[in-house]
Length: 160
Image (cartoon, rainbow, N blue to C red; front, side, top):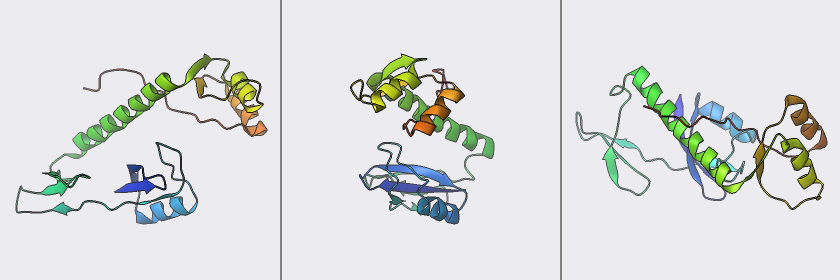
């Protein structure tokens, strides 16, 4: 696995894991990589701060501000702990996404497909909505060319 800093054409910088550098190249060429902030598919590798070794136990890495911070090598975190930390970070990001949606979009419940259709047809003012839809309703939206995004909706709970 390889971690890349990525940057979209709007200037948003984010990280993503790939199986190898070839996987990034293929997914990028096919437009499969999407900026989590703005949805842009014009994404390139961003300059990454290298790990710098100052001697045993004194590794550092520059963060995006140029400040030096301790680096954590793969050997310093056993596999299970590293996996738990990555999952914790993913969960935190998903909670931030949930909070953003709940704060900035209108909840329409089980009327999601109907309201998305009304927005698409110009019957009501365009706005961000969220809610629930059955697989059949989602298929109908696909067939009609109505854009939507499915999100993994994580529960609010402690990540200790």
